[in-house]
Amino acid sequence: MKYVMINENSIGLLFDKGVFKGVLAAGKHRLKKNREIDVLALNGTLHSAKAPLDILLLNEKLRAICTTVEVGDEELALHYVDGRFCEALRQGKYAFFRTAYQHTFTKVDISDPRVDESVPSHVFQKLSPTLYSKVEVSEHEKALLYIDKKLEGVLSAGTYYFWRTARKVETAFVDMRMRQMDVTGQEILTADKVTLRINFVLRYRITDCVKAVSEIESLYEQMHVSAQLALREFVGKYRLDELLESRDELSRFVYERLKQKENELFIEITDAGVKDIILPGEIREIMNTVLVAEKRAQANVITRREEVASTRSLLNIARLMDENETLYKLKELEFIERIAANVGNINLQSGGDILSQLVSMVRPKEVNH
Image 1 (cartoon, rainbow, N blue to C red):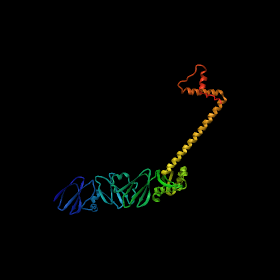
Image 2 (image 1 turned 90 degrees about the horizontal axis):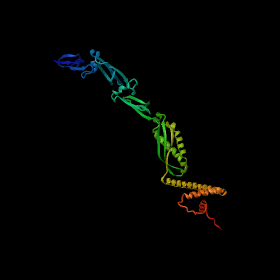
Image 3 (image 1 turned 60 degrees about the vertical axis):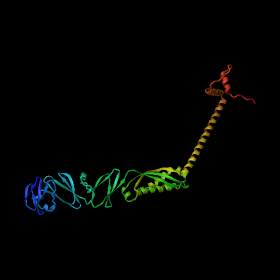
């Protein structure tokens, strides 16, 4: 014989040679040989290593103090203790003592990986990551949802949860913002066989994310090739000089060609233009030489034009002075004033008019022939 003490808020499961015999309440108990007791706390779960749960629940006393739940193969049971979420129970049968706490359960069908809206998002903070996956979609994005490789829908901005099941969940993100593409370093021959390098830039946005992903293998590559072909089509028709003068026409041509591709590529082209036209080194030197010569010729023309205008002005002044003696005298005085401003000393004879002497100094002497 032996004695076993069962504390308050606990019960004992009595086994005789491994066979469940009944339930013992709190207190001191005397056991016969070959009998054992599993002591369980009443604030926990009904379980025993010596007997299956179904066997234990055959006992009417245990059934009266337990809350049971059975979870199917494609189910989860959200376990709440006194109204607070505690855990998620997977497939199986469970029994909880209700003497200390109230246990409630919400069953969730996980045959569809998409989490139902009835499941509050805060429960995922206590769930193991092995039970679910999380997808976050930003404001500027769309996410294409695939289940078992099949498109199931488009996710807008927000946070989404999916149950981890045998069905595979995948997402593909698409940026819906305005984007820029640079077509750089395109070496293209002009009509006169000059190799140019052209840098082109365009801005666009995706209009149909589903078709852009599902029907086009590489949207960026398709746009890049379309821009390249349009550039080559235009540049190949013009000589170098003509092309440099029609840069704006080149931008418009490529832009219009790309606009024709919008419905095919499921995009909207907002603007496009030539960024740089880079000439080969030897051509650049020749162009610089031509430019310097042109500027010098323009400078010479301007100089000659100014000289002609100056001569014409002097001729008009001389004609007026010849016709008006007073104007001639004023010009003489102006000329004397300018000379006097640059002369340190002037020697004059004591006799005679001072003004007449100054005039005689600057007037050319008459030559007799």
